[in-house]
Image (cartoon, rainbow, N blue to C red; front, side, top):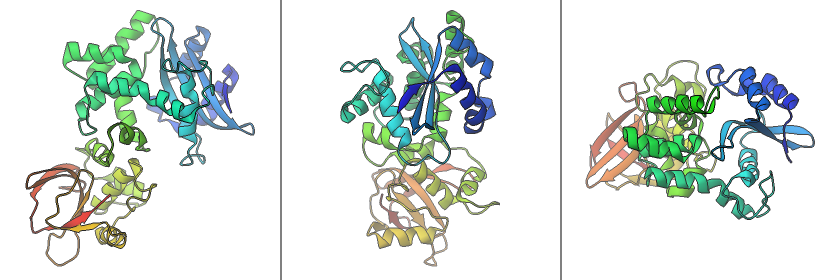
Length: 348
């Protein structure tokens, strides 16, 4: 059941859940939220089952522009990975202005397919406005994401003034809009890195673009990471290890591929190969891999895999990759398709 939250309920969630669900640097003070409640520019909904809170969503609203900005969304710890988040978003989508069949109130849409359609239509329009036609086009993808948070007006503004998205102009737009509205804040200037860092379902981009390229999109957001602590600690290691497989597994997890059974979670390359071979999803050197395919290497020629990466694309006889633990960082590389160090490929 979805219900609009009272100020007291919001304060309880803030004190008992939000301080744990969001990094301190991303959480605005309660006084700012309270000010928004008092001038009717802030509201929230909770999802309950048998009076137990499962998830919550906090919004900023602009009556002037008929715009709703999702400020915070979280499923409570212990309730995640169970489909609650997707169901919550589908029910909240009833309030979206793209809903023209049902009343604009929580849980009003009774047609599941229509609910999903409404939920993605606005973002699809942002993708179109940004000119983004592929999940590998990271510049335009970032522009569409920030536009989704701010409203489509940001996209045309950013293209006209700067040619596209940047972290700097996202902050500038937020500051200008907050000042013009008399608000203390407008949207999330860091929405792009926040989404790309925590995005884990894989379903939105896969549904809009198709294919298994989502793992590539995730991998590309990590370019420049050095040392791999983010990936080997996620896997469960307490100290630095050879982390190429941890990186590939982390990207697969963020893209929803491990949960869906399309790839394993592995820290040893040979374990990954064994899994793909057991599933009949292994191809040897010479194969022309699609984006998202895992590529395994044997540097020493001893029959044991030493390294794994993610195929970004294949053009002619060249395979382009994104690899973790490549010079102890996430880097892009390229190889001839018949390079002798390539052992083969795990097909997703």
